[in-house]
Length: 212
Image 1 (spheres, one colour):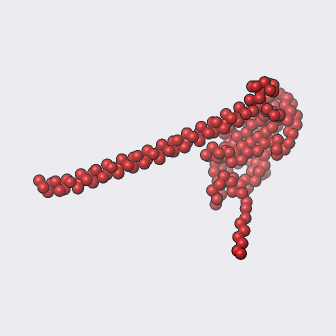
Image 2 (spheres, one colour; image 1 turned 30 degrees about the vertical axis):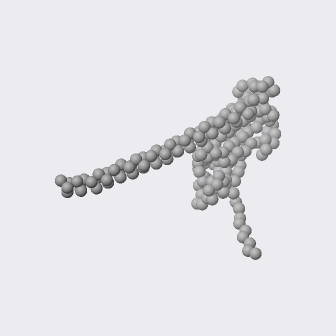
Image 3 (cartoon, helix red, strand yellow; image 1 turned 90 degrees about the vertical axis):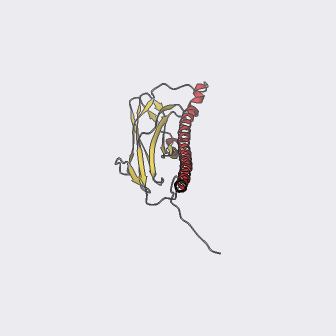
């Protein structure tokens, strides 16, 4: 009887310790899973908020009666893709190589000086690069109904290694531009590199160290 108690006693203690440790492990796992879900939910909410704010900011003057709303179906994005410097479609590219975003816009009505914009968003929902023709090109000119415009954005790719999704838009010119068309996830591009410093971009740089 005493022998059985001595054997069962340590076994019971070990069992209790295992149960306690298992509970702590489950609590920790649950906390990590909950934190991960919260992080994903927050990133999704932030992206939806940014997208909504992007659209509202360009329509608020129209809704307030400060500018007339343009006719519907002025222009629409016909296609968009990533290309190499010599015009070959690509889905991946090495860091440091020249890259091109090509987009085609079909005008269904006349438009004057429309603005073409491109953004690249990484896997975390962060816009790593954005550009629009108003700054990089100037006035785009007049487009007639039925005309197809091909736009190319060229840049040196110093983005950090990641997968990037392509967002493109065409808007009216002016202080309260109406969005003619805006497309999310038009394509994706994988940037690869042998080393990275850990930022959103790896800009070319040099260090200088002086001793005094």
